[in-house]
Amino acid sequence: MSPKYDLNKFIKICKTGEETVVIGKKTLKDAKTDFNLYSRTDILDFIANDGLEKLRHINTKPLELNSSVIESGVQDTNFDKEELYFVDAYSFYSGNDFGYFAYYFNSESNRWVIKSFKINREPDPKKLGD
Image (cartoon, rainbow, N blue to C red; front, side, top):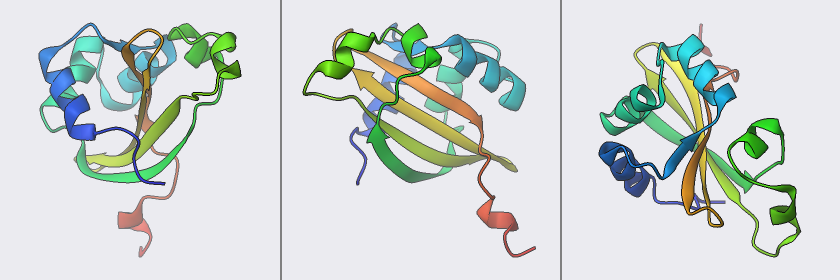
């Protein structure tokens, strides 16, 4: 499945630092631990200023309900509706670090949600030949 959302549009939204982008506590913790990005502003600036190098779309999947999703404002009742939320996931590089980034749009709250921002646990394609 091709991406659900226009990533360039999302990056432009990050450039404005809009309050329409939500980042949960676990995602903030992962970004701090894995990429030394300590705040919501740090993450948005990183995205807005081309920090996501060599982006590659991994997949687009229906959102799975878990504690970090609930924390970002999605309620169980939303999953009973016809319109599901879809998450676009990407791999990227930041220097030599191989990362994973996933986001979606919550139409009920009219907000973008950065669901994941962490080191990619999948094998790094650069190192597969080693």
